[in-house]
Image (cartoon, rainbow, N blue to C red; front, side, top):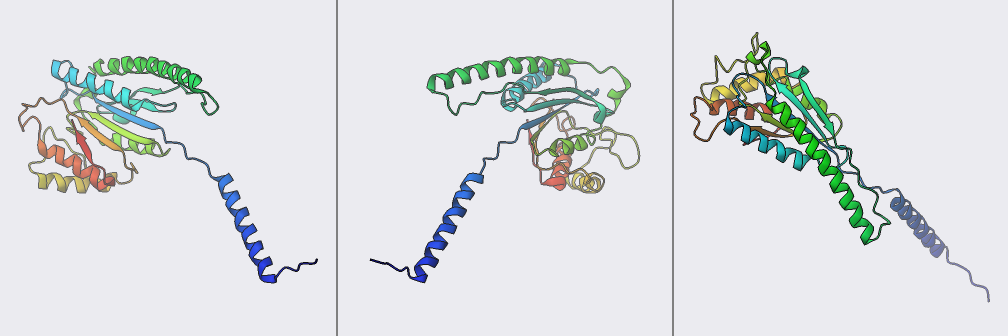
Length: 261
């Protein structure tokens, strides 16, 4: 018996075959995008206004560094860079560390092998973290007796942040500082001699200064300020208008919020 196919049926089958082929090709070309590494920038204030030898400051800063290393250095490629804040911040990189520990592929591993791989990776990572923390603490306690401790160039941290953001990393920034910008020269701020007297003035200055600084594409980093001030510090010592200046500046630069500790 001879069967003839209706042209409409032929057209339908053809469309189904094309759709099936397209769907199969799409499935084969889909790949998972790996998580971006974490790039941590730590700026340690090495000027006269921050004394890390004080018990309160030293304990607070040591604990904060330990938490940063523990939380941010988790996978191969995660990076920690430490810069000193002083007169020449942009040229003051003190430390650059990258996680080397790598977890073996576990796709074909059984439960026992997976556990062994996890244990081996965690042990290697913890050894690295211990080394990183010791090195970071040594930089924290390093004294700056030179003339660069007279001035505080926090603006100079912005091109460093922008550089870190270029590679698409998850950038996290920590300022261990009183955030008292103090630089001589036209168009610069010296909060030691002329701090903002109100939140309104702080906002006005920040918006003026953004015109000089918006050239730096800092992206959307997480920014944390870890201050050296005790809870009982006076507003004269811990000027809230200085804090407002930086909050406004980072908001204007890229909608970045600052967390204070």
